[in-house]
Amino acid sequence: MFRKCCAVASLYALVLTGCGGTSNLSTPGTYTPPATTPTPVAISASAAIKHIVVIYGENVSFDHYFGAYPNAANVDGTTFTAASGTPTPANYVSTPALLTSNPNLNAANGVGATNPFRLGHGQAATGDQDHNYNPEQLAFDNGKMDLFPMSVGTADGSLTASTGAPAITNTTGLTMGYYDGNTVTAMWNYAQHYAINDHSFGSAFGPSTPGALELAAGQTNGVTYTVPYANIASGVIPDGQGGYTDINDEDPAGDVCSSPTANFSMTGKNIGDLMNTAGITWGFFEGGFNLSTTNSNGTTGCARSTVATYYPGTKADYIPHHQPFQYYASTANPNHNRPTPGVAIGAADTAGANHEYDTADFNAALTASTPTMPQVAFLKAPGYQDAHAGYSDPLDEQTFVVNEINLIESSPFWQNTAIIIAYDDSDGWYDHLTDITNGSQSSSDAAVCNNTLTGSTAPAAGLPGPGSNGAPVQGRCGKGPRLPLIVISPYAKKNYIDSTPTEQASIPRFIEDIFLGSQRMGTGSFDATAGTLMNMFNFTTTAGVAPNPNVVLLNATTGAVTSGN
Image (cartoon, rainbow, N blue to C red; front, side, top):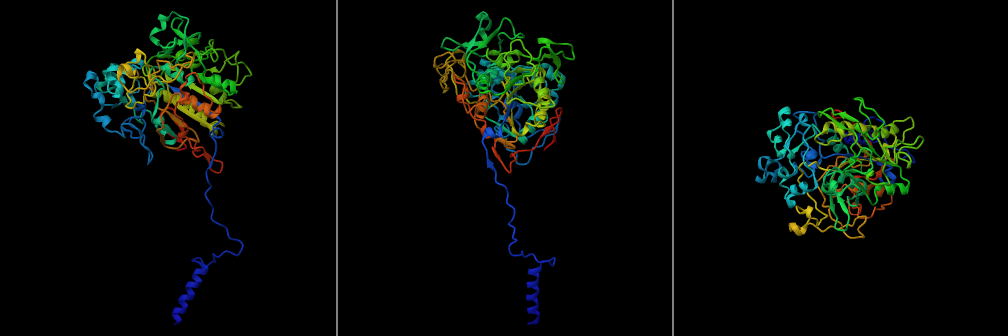
């Protein structure tokens, strides 16, 4: 009995004192509840995003950069290892049969018939593929996606001879090549830390100028010209309503750097017109636009040029047909006037820059003693860094993109900025997905979009043009090839893949939704029907902090993360 009582007493004492011998019982009136986790609070997109920066690259299909994501071979270049739990997009990893029994083994492709194959870090510089409006449609083969080598493939014998690339690169099968995270390391690292879309397409088929116009206006209809029609006939399609639709790369009329014989202008509204009316500060910044600068190699004016680090030869810095706002009288700066002294970059300046600048102007404003950044900025690399195969490459592109993003993320504007990386066209590089949503009854669209000639299920042309009195216009077959689209922001979902169907015109739509109360351009712009980018974001704050606050800086040469991982 004594031992039992002692045991009970000892247990009671232990409860009172705990192992340390000190009472854990609170004094009445002093109880403190456990700490609670702050609850995320929803905020509006326009409250979260005060600045949009669009980095618009050249000539990359989704599978060309992300076909193997997130699995890198790690046999050359910069080592890449994906974070645990990284999702897989619609690519060769999620559909491995594309690597072993690809439709492009089709005998119709001749010696170029092949499965997709890896291009290594030492093979970053390649020849250009065919990416014209009609050949791209032929490659799609009415949705079978099996005639890329025959229709758009272009051999590059020097690639085989100088780098030891597979022999298939010296055939039209080169179109089937892809890179992984050992070469496009920065892009894969941005995908790890922010959001990508794996169902984003060109708004229509075709090369750089149509893709540039889709960014600015959401459409390619409304061509006008004063040069002989024969000079531009191969670059336009009669729209069936007495007007013309652009499908090629003629220069903007009036630009002092343009071809004097093959050029045109555009009618209708562009996103710059809407921003001007609303008082939004904005600018298009293209490398080489400042004609008063002299490069280290002595070139100046329209002849400014630079030698790429990874691609042999020089390339003009400023390429007129990459500058979409130069096609519209309301937003053009044809003489490349410099900004008026005392007028902020991005502000109204019709007597000066009129919103058209050099990339150096963007960087100078951002690094000034009192930094400024327009509410909307479009950045276009100088030619040698724009990723266009045939004169640029992914590694020179990486240098430009990383330097610009590091600068923005290190600025006082970062916490309320959305950066969008997107592309003007696919260059003809293979991609396996298609999403035809706008038809065309033109004979030029007989391969895919003319449902009368092909017997396909392509829809009829659905939207008017600027001068068609509401009637549908032809020559805008699309969507075109699938392209990469990355969103980088403190409000971007982290390591996230969005499969919302989007397109190039989704970018002006996003600008409209953030700054213009969702006002649309009208006159047939695809902004009215384009998918939203909003699903790539998480518009909440927790205790005042954005959901993805880390500043992730990369090495511009290697693409590796240097801080904020």
